[in-house]
Length: 207
Image (cartoon, rainbow, N blue to C red; front, side, top):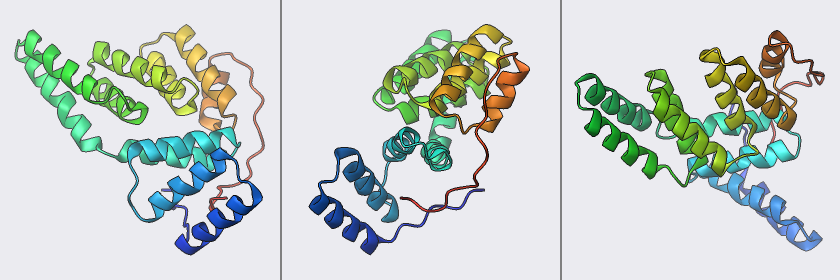
């Protein structure tokens, strides 16, 4: 398990003041604000997802992956419980009740790419494919340039042996974040040539 990046609150305060004096851009100010919330454990899954996107855009792949993964840990048990309730109703012959419960759960996460992705994974785990695709699509609509969202969608289609769609989403994910060795390996097995960046080790400091 990757170690949580340590960010000292005082250093963040100094960073904010320094960047303000130097004319910090909006992205850096947002990153400092989000890291401060993480340090004080006041963050939401959306905050971690946003950090994942910021680090992705900056080419800090290890940190990007770390924060994407962190965002998915929020409310994971709640999403699994919601998916299990839908499956229970469906297996019990209550198709209408299952659809109503699924629609309600999907609606609850309709403004969050991180939570939509988490619910999609919970549905997929229970082979509730229609709802899983709906959630993956919702997550992609909210965050089309997220490598993690495209990667999860790609692996979903790969699990269904839809190699063409799998290649499309995995290639998009790798284009956004070329630091994903697992995605590169999968694309290679699918016959897609990729150029892999040298490994530089895990970044352990938020900069």
